[in-house]
Length: 229
Image 1 (cartoon, rainbow, N blue to C red):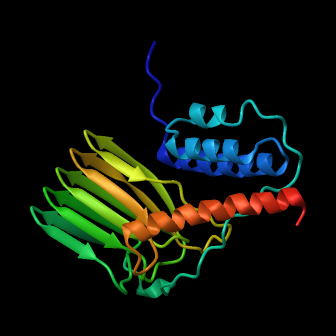
Image 2: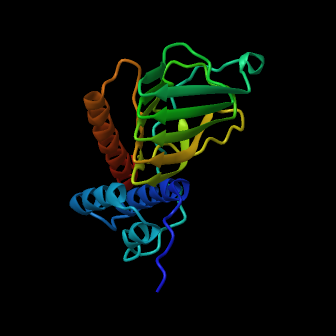
């Protein structure tokens, strides 16, 4: 039997978000206790296939037709004027390093090449264009680190060949068509692409603690809904 092709990262991210919302509503409906909710939420973040995500809710009863709890609001982000945004730019790290950070304005399409080198792209205080901005990456025996603000929706559709694209599910797609969206694709050949969400001034440890606290807040929100507060 032929192996199934891997699930596209964008579809997997969206399925994770839907599963988290469903689990919180099941908790509010008394279908799960605290310990079981925690176990299944951990399973969501470990799941790497759609079947694994479906398995986390397949044994639960049907949900009542109520809205699922809403996630935390998106913080405001700096928007660039469309006329100030260039159509395309290129960043190259050849056996060296390249970095874009601070108050910069990303182009509509950024091409990134990391050949035995490293590239860092920090969007936390960037002036992002409205709508979709694209990043196309080619990393060979090199690495690309991308840091985004927590409120930014990121779509990832990259492929790793003896390498990988490392990205955790983030916020849901915005309903406003002018809201900034970052779409990342490309190839990592014996290299890696890492996408992390952090506030300005926040390091990796602080971000992990914040994400843990946000998950606690999400569970608390589900408990309040169950109590009818």
